[in-house]
Structure formats: C-alpha cells, structure tokens
Image (cartoon, rainbow, N blue to C red; front, side, top):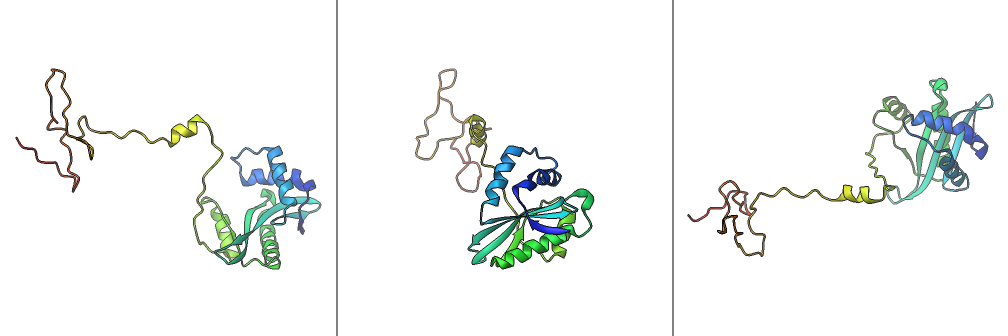
Length: 204
C-alpha cells in the first residue's frame, strides 16, 4: 500500500469515501470538485490518498493555520476516512502517521482534529494514536438567508399580565374600564416590586 498526495484525477474515488464518512449528508459533486481544486492549489492545505492495487482506499485532508494559541503553525486534520471494507487493517494509522510527519516537516507545533460525539471507535483510535481530548467544537451555519431566518431570530413577545404596572419613568395612570370608570389592578394581577419579587402593598 502507498500513501501519496492526491491529484484531481482522484476526485471520483474520493467522493464515495466522503459519502461513507457522512452517510446522511447529501453531497454535491460540482461544489465538492471546486473545493478540491482550490485545496490542491493552496499551500495551506494537503490531501493524502492511501492507494492499494491502484485503488484509493483511504483519504485524509489537513489544513495549516497560523495559531496564536500554539504561538506558531498548527496542523488541523479536516477529514480522515478509510473505505469500509478495508478498515481494521492499519490504513487509518498509516494515514495518520503520514499526516503527522508532514505536519512536523512543515514546522507545525501541534496537530489537532475534531470527531463527532457518536464516533466512539474513532475516539479510541485517536487516543491510541496519541491524541488527547481537549475541547468541544461549537459550530454555527451562516448560509441561511431571507425572511424565515429573520423571523427565527425575532424574540417571542413576553407574556405580561393584563395590568403589569407602570414602566420605569412612566406615570401610573389608570386605564378606563369598559363601564367608563377608571379601574386599577386586580388582586390577581398585582405588580411585583423591583426588589425581591414580592407583591407591592397597596393602600386600601
């Protein structure tokens, strides 16, 4: 088996591996091809293929970043996948070692990756490979646009009592009732005091 740098000719073999890595995610070949082409032309990204008998059976991608936390270059493993029927034969370990060695040669002070919560076997593999659990990953999509996204961001109106009392800086005018008389707060909707949350005493 050979570990080598990927070329654009490997694209058709990489896509099925990514589908195995993300089985519930629809993949768009045109978008993926543009991403691969940009990565292959970038000095900050590296793609490696594991090839056996002329067939790509594993894939790893890595990005080099300038990190304040490590005070220097940081290598980040973006994807690592081995063909399902070829797993358990050390191919993932060889890809990991190749990326680690490449990171050293490029002067990286640390190599990191993230892995989904449900990938328990992958977690054990990474820990056996010398990685340690250090942090959570927080992610937020930025592609959603339009009225639906705007409505989703709006806060729901607060549920105020029928008579919530005067706001700060407003006079305590009483609203007229349906009979024309001015009515005050009912005993059920007495306003809360600003301190402690206890009901405010009213003079009877």
